[in-house]
Image (cartoon, rainbow, N blue to C red; front, side, top):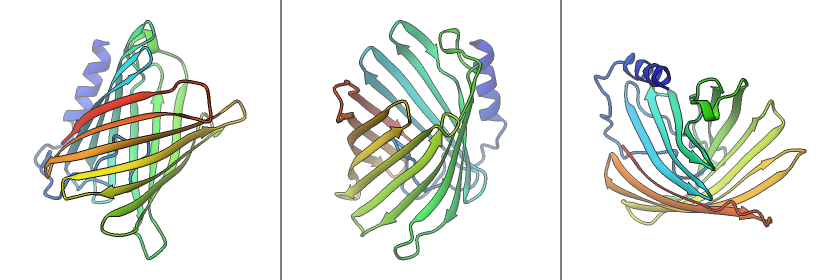
Length: 233
């Protein structure tokens, strides 16, 4: 565990911190919903998004650290640590990249590419494995009006055996409060999982956001209820 933490610290501090957390525009986050947005943070800026997830016999701290290497490209680090059933510790560390592809043009959505990769060896003992997992997706968004926007993702994981889909609509009630409702699913030959979640985001300051969200399964007797709350800055 100590070696893993040292690797994370090395990754974080190998980047210049001159403009760290110094964005001037209102924060734009990838939490608390399940999809990724098309937005990338400015060059040489950092953004931290952290939240607690509560589910049946599970408590997880989810952290996303984002760094802008250009105006349209960002590197990301994702960690999940906590308790699941009788196991506790750090789940496999995930590295990610997001690349803006095109801006919205009339009905053509803004599109970004998002990739994730993790090595199951980069985890504490209880969550360690031998596989390398990856997910590739396209994030898309249409701004319908000043108040409403439609965001959706299409991606593949588990060696392209799983098709992952999200679709949500967001509503900006004011300059400080926004809400959303989202459908998300994972489809495969083995099983199809359909879920939905709703959430509220509150902007305390231009670069400080609080959020809360709840979700559950659809069309299934399985109980996949969860709740999450977090802070981003």
